[in-house]
Image (cartoon, rainbow, N blue to C red; front, side, top):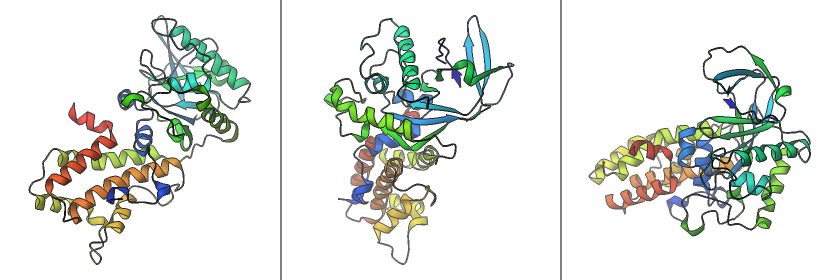
Length: 357
């Protein structure tokens, strides 16, 4: 984890199975945002983050700063650090929309919309100053810094000398010390906004009137003032990773026409779905899909949060599509292939891009 000092310092059909409460129009984008969090390559493919989360780093975690002329400084957190995490490539320069959640929500359009330097360095310094002013005033000292992604994960710390201790430079194994609370976060996907104007492939906030963004600003402030980041927050990111690892290859195989004829596809689907089928009630599609949907979700997982609903909805879409391929005898092979191709377009998983490359 790199810290960036600044001086202050910048360190329906089956596919619609589920209750209305489980269905979210942006469930696919929420699922992808959770899976891509703190993952550089995946975030690079989906750079425009729309979410703000509470995150924490434990006391004693090693952090690094590469200072000119070529020295690597190693620090440890002097206490548990409470951070505000912006998802997407929120620290990246030169890509439109990557810092909309900072500039339009946190700073209420007080940051210049056009960069004042080719690499936006001075504007980024202005952002850090404003962030730390908010931390010390409106947020009552409840945030120690800000976590963003660019080439590496960077932390902007407001009280560098207080929150870090300089140690020896030592070789160490990688640490996974950041915990993100995915069950209590604020995302622009929740406010009924047109985030994809003109059929844009990437979401943005630049075209939205500032008054329409006020509810998001209010909810970010409320989250900061009323919630504590949890070191034991449920890891929805790990769940999305399991789901993608389990289903990405088979979906691409079906979409690519690997299975033929239809009988061969149904045999493969039965093998895949066998753990969820009650052979005493074989054609109960609803029950099969529900069991499939819950496969990777522990019974202890939260059930009514936005992350829970998004993950369950996306998984339900996958399970219903595959179950229909097995049990809906009105479908022909061409129908199944088309359904899976549409599902892949909906999911937009970075794993699909990995395989293409």
